[in-house]
Image (tube, rainbow, N blue to C red):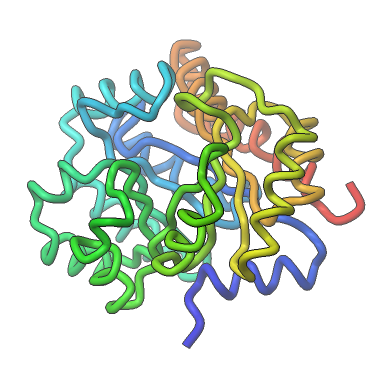
Amino acid sequence: MPSRIEKTFKELKSQGRSAFIPYVTAGDPDINLSQKILNSLPSGGADIIEVGMPFSDPMADGPAIQQAGIRALGNGQNMKKTFSMVKNFRSQNNYTPLILMGYYNPILQFGNEKFLSECSASGVDGLIVVDLPIEHSQELCKPAQEVGIDFINFITPTTSPERLKNILDVSTGFLYYVSIAGITGTKVPDIKILENMVRKIKTYTNLPVGVGFGIKGAEQVRNISKFSDAIVVGSSIVNKINDLKIQNLTDDELIESLVNFLLSLSNSLQKGA
């Protein structure tokens, strides 16, 4: 039976457009508002959603997501509350794929078997674990895939063809191409180089290829969507949420402004845009 992620990419391919994948940090800017934000993302055009599991030492993340994690942890966000958020979202939405993204330490502390059980029970569709290399696929990757949860791996600008083949052996859902060398949200990718790399990766696999890190505005989204299967936007969304929060808006006003911002990005992916 195809997963929600597989179904989504198949449907979008038939429409001739890429997937819009927004990232938010669970528990930011506060636990209640974070739930409302998560529930609103499909209204902003989200085809797939990435939810960050906050961690105290997010080595691959830039300042925006680091600060979001600090805020979330300060609010008391933990793995149990993150799963509660997923369950709440899934009670209202049974079709939009949801991916948990984060680091291995909190998962290990929670317990791998318990973590995967909660993922299945709450309606998680995929996992991205930034610091768990493919050499340790037996730890979480393969057990996740055995219970029907896709495991999405990173490809970077320095990934060799040999390592790419090894990554493909243990990847499902889609491939996440890191568009820049460095941490999230700090640089702007070179579109031409990016296009060449994505097209090269596609010669090795039929899996969809999504692009993330450093994507900030509608023009970038539009240009990258011409050759990629998905666009992941994280830091600029996290920054937008923080900017709106400090304006002392009501929750409803903040959600409305955020959805409009998301639509400005996701509408760039519409067929013929």
